[in-house]
Image (cartoon, rainbow, N blue to C red; front, top):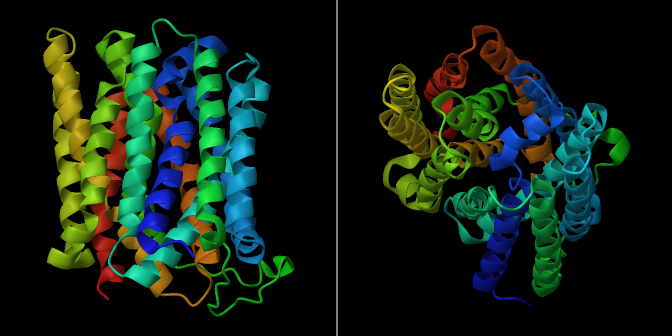
Length: 392
């Protein structure tokens, strides 16, 4: 049997690959939007459509993970992510993009469920908020792929870049799964272990406090993923190689917060951690993103630096919130971990499905991405009011 330290290292590598391949195309969204010939509102709506695929996955795949195991779901969802990404960067049809994005959303959410289910299995055996460390490994993968995307954007076409990333990450994941071996083959003996696929809807339970808290915790993170590069490129007007820097700053600050999540949690507890991070992230983001908007016309570099500070503050503010709320969800339920993550995710993504298009169309109709991004920042502030779920 593999030692726990080696298991943590290999599972961290899986989270790293999950972030690296899943977010490789994000820093190049401006190119993809231009390639498809879409407006901000149209592009934002099509990107949001991936949530439909995620919802289908979160509703069903938690039970599949529980019944058939983490290994199989990680393996096959990785191939689905790879295939959908390769197609989407080689086809200029908006309809094909829509279909591929829904497929991508389903596959990525399935990967998320399986990876987090095993992460909680490890956390139960080790104690602490180690789930935050795994989320930190994911964020490191996102930063690494963002830096590479920015570096190659001016001389490697988008489709070739994504094809290389997909092939390398697919083989790396297969290697990690092989090394983990029997560590992924175990039975979760939580209550509800005999749940059947046809019982999905019957067993569905909504923890509204956790779900609303998670929405407040992650909406700005998702919005930064969708819009940070576009804002820097189109509204501030920096060159493509610099356009990804605010998003890299966002993810770098998130990495720091997540890798230190256990230390922060042990020092002040999850309740105070949620309250302080949400306040810090929301207030500083709003202040500095509006400063950048006021400066961009006459002081481009000052506006760029203010944007970097805004997204860095938001990244640190969002860093450990999701881990704290997910941990609270597993403590407040007797269902298997994969099922809990899936059910909470269904509610979370349903709520986001209503809010993400609003953000996109506020940007379109007002002509101001700053105004649109203020919406998730204000919602991040409200996370502190749901912190009571983590008091235990």
